[in-house]
Length: 146
Image 1 (tube, rainbow, N blue to C red):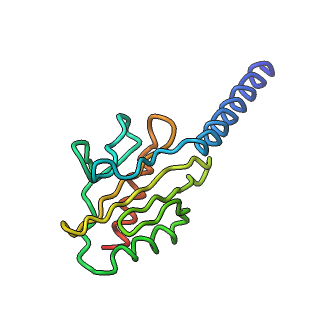
Image 2 (tube, rainbow, N blue to C red):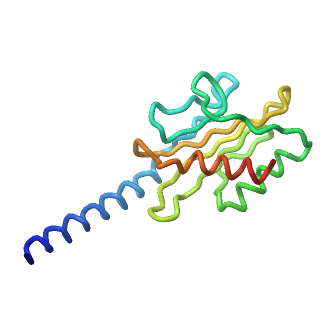
């Protein structure tokens, strides 16, 4: 019986270590692509990404009726502990860390002044599934701003 418990402890410890190493590896990658052809990059082919722009769009953009909506967006992502990487007049890239393991996830926004919307994209840097964390983040930001 003690051999089984030792095996389970080693296996669990190895799994935890593997997850932490994957999280550290996520710090070296970047899922943000900036603006490509006037739009945010399309979604990944995995369910760990949401985007409001392009053929693979799976969320709605943020309606920017107010003149200070862009500034409010910057304040909101900062209040949610986002770390700004790039801030331009019509584009921003922010990095968020997941609470438990510290995986880094990239959030991008593009202000389309003509259409009066802000397109949003949030994507995990590693893995196949993010268990909905990017979608929840974008919905939280939209709820705060609307």
